[in-house]
Length: 181
Image 1: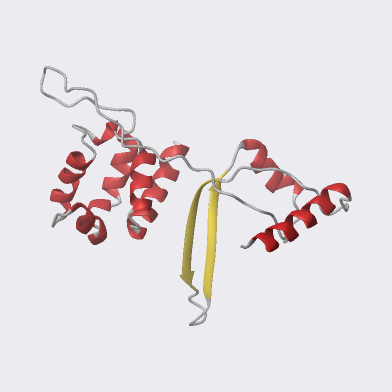
Image 2: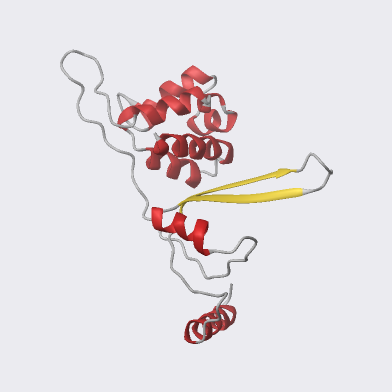
């Protein structure tokens, strides 16, 4: 989007705010953790579909359920707010020799169950061959005795930064499931 397009959209937005119609009500909403998906319809070859899901606040969910008419089109200007996170540093291992368990264990269990460590692009990015070597290498990469100490957003941001699309898809699915528990 260039400056003239942005200026035009902002002028239209200003006009709608000053003179709203009954079916057009401006609102502000935050759309968190976007998860993009695409595929091809089974009905007809060449028919593609695209979908993006987001996490919403309860107020945002109510807006979508109650206030927006079915079949409406949402128009707006979006921007990304993102602060990069560094991988969490683990605490020293307890004296009994077992690694400390962190608060993110359930998320990592979901990733393991979804075989994220068997995805070839992850193995290539980490520099390993085989799922178990990859899982072990993740501990070293994130400098963690237990992956349960590594924040899910740190792994997700790392996968996104390295353009690991298949890993990112599995991570987003596990993250969504973990957040609902």
